[in-house]
Image (cartoon, rainbow, N blue to C red; front, side):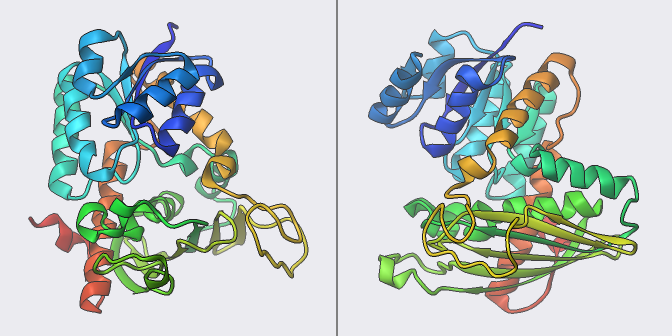
Length: 342
């Protein structure tokens, strides 16, 4: 199988992670170029990996030979870039969240279907070994029927300024907790049908966040079609460590994914430290998952098989996020089906 030639679009932290894996982390992939609207950032990342840098995907398509794009830009730009790639016959691995609206998700799905290109969404937990093994055991019936799935994400630092604006990002529930909505849906094997969300803002004002509706804590309860319940809690910034874990309570057992390995009492006061070693960032926590995600993408392109995280999965998470946002803004439970209506 020939190596998959990749253009990484977006030279931020996520772009750097994918560029590293495409350059030397995954044997089936090659980094062809990097793209960023900030020429300085594009040039710096390109120089780091010894590849050309371009200010736009259009310019990269005109000057470089590559098979696929990895989109790591702000969420509002995802549909345009995926559609542009599909029109040029290029496959796409698009970071989460897929888009801001269901209409935009549908345009992305239609564009990639028409072009017969692969669209994979960056739900890295679907590729992280302990999460993959947990899903295998659940599907095999090892813990019986899932009754409750709990997913937790806590990010150490404040998200970028554009993510503070609910209109540009759909808020933390999208930017941070999209992974959790997908994890609950994936591990339960069932669709999310109703959500109730509460949010709170403890640190925004002290850090100069002026955006309306900013929040740094969220708790969501979910009802799934198969009768299972779900729970999501997220904090960003938590200021101490990066944490991503899940619990699945079944009729015949319990699975705990990503728990701490040490004593029942744990105190953490700074990133990467405490009574036991902790993860300082998401690139560290999911280093293996990001490599496997790219390997899976290369395999999907080579074989024409569906990726583990499809565009339909990305759309489902966006629908749940939109319902959760409506829930906390209107202080009521919201049916996810309501978000299907324009």
